[in-house]
Image 1 (spheres, one colour):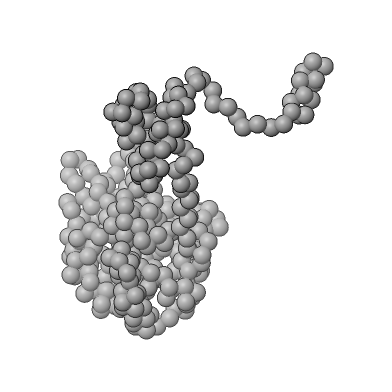
Image 2: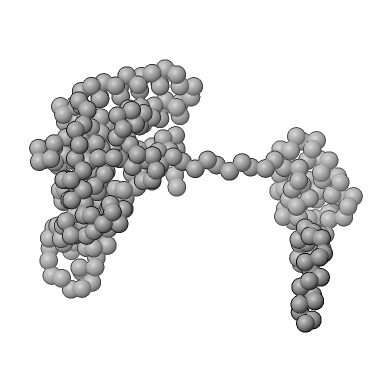
Amino acid sequence: MESLRRWAMRREMPRSEPQRRGRPESIPAWACWLIRQCHEKRYGKWGPVVLHCWAEREGLGRYSAGAVARVIADLRPKKEPRPRPKRYEVSAPMVMWSEDGAGFEERGRKHELLLAQDERSRKKVGRRLVRGPAAGSDVASCLREAFEAHGAPLVLKQDNGAPLNAEEVRDLCDEYDVVLLNSPPGYPPYNGKKERNFRDVRSFERAMRRRGVEAPLPARIDAAIHDLDVERPRPVLGGRTATEVFVQDRIALPDRRRFKMEVETRCLELVAEAGSRTEIAAARRRAVVEVLSKYGLLVWKAGVSTNSRAQAGT
């Protein structure tokens, strides 16, 4: 009954702001007033650390930056939350591929695995394991084999590495009328599906070694890719495998020459309208997204980030 009585009294008492626990503030009221005046006089550009030094220089006392921050907390502008980036999912296979490379090591020898992946189905449409760092000719040869086996996509997404942007690769894309789309510098989430893909391949290959599977590196990589493409049901694909989605969800795509022309035209328009170097750098990515959306080849719900103006690393 005593507990019930205290609970009823708390319910009837007016709510008040929670008080800060711990020691009381060490800054006296007159010093708080001077610190606030100084903050306002400097147009709010002197932060807690600067005011902490200023108070000590002026003989007001030695106070921590955290204590000063609480004194001027109500004078500082509230930061607006950053808008969440829009996200899209490619609606059909063969619309967009992504390509990248990852390093592997076996018996002290370094290898690089080149993989091309369909963005919709997550199927690995092309791969090549080369000794040492891959060159532009290796990337072009891997892509040519994939183009001849499955056909060319409308868009090829890749990062800014030198081998991926070699002259041989650009000539091959011009030959097949493929639009090249580069990720923003230092922003790996833009090509997040490819990063996740390499993580899955590495994880499967390491698990085979831990279980004592005696097989060379190429055989372990082939087994990992076979598992990811053919055998593993993917929750993101509704329980289907990557190969099933790649085969079953194919649709008629727009004429690739017309598509590429529309992208180039829109890119030039965005460059002409740009007001900064950042907007110029993002023009091609924006053009690709706008033209794909025009043809209904992007579904705006979840998937790959379209933060085309991102420049900083994560």
